[in-house]
Every structure is written in C-alpha cells, then in structure tokens.
Length: 118
Figure 1 (cartoon, rainbow, N blue to C red):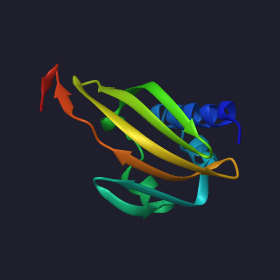
Figure 2 (figure 1 turned 60 degrees about the vertical axis):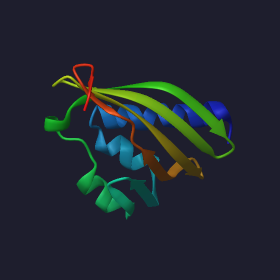
Figure 3 (figure 1 turned 90 degrees about the horizontal axis):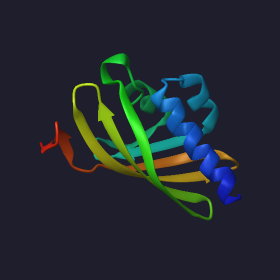
C-alpha cells in the first residue's frame, strides 16, 4: 500500500477517535482487529470499543507529531491534552491489512499535569 494511503488512514483513525465518531472508526478497523497497550493484552475489537473508546469524560485533543511508514506498518507519535490540564505523549504501532487497521500496539509516554511530571 502506498505511503500516502496509509498516512491518510492514520489521520482518519485518529480523527475518528478524537471526534468520537465510532462509525468511522469501525469502518477503519479490520473484523479481527487486535489492540495491545500497557493496560490491555491483545484484546479483540469488541473489547477495544468497550474499554478504550472515548467518552465525554475523557475528552481530549490529539496532535499527531510524526508518522513513519514501513511497508504495511506505521509508527505514530502524538501529544494528547485533556481539558483538565493533563498531557502525555504516546507512540502507536499500527499494522494494516487490505486497507484496514488490523492491529494497534500502544506505548505510553510520561504524563504531566499543568507541565509537572506526574
């Protein structure tokens, strides 16, 4: 898949998450989607939407800082800021199959509250 196509899919996925557009996210994720983070060990698609999908209490802004494409995979580093002054930087490793996201592995960065390490 072309780098431009994958970059567009990454932006669409992050945009759907930030705007809480679950329908758009569902269209981007493969049926056999797997999600792993320090809090989730290879959970399936249904569990991902149950545990990880944003709610109004967790509203935040995400700013993609870097996307690195390698074949059918992408590293994405982004900065998140919550309305309560908390911020953190994460990196996600996404794998694509047939134009959809089949796997996401998240690596958490440090968390700050009003600029102070938490």
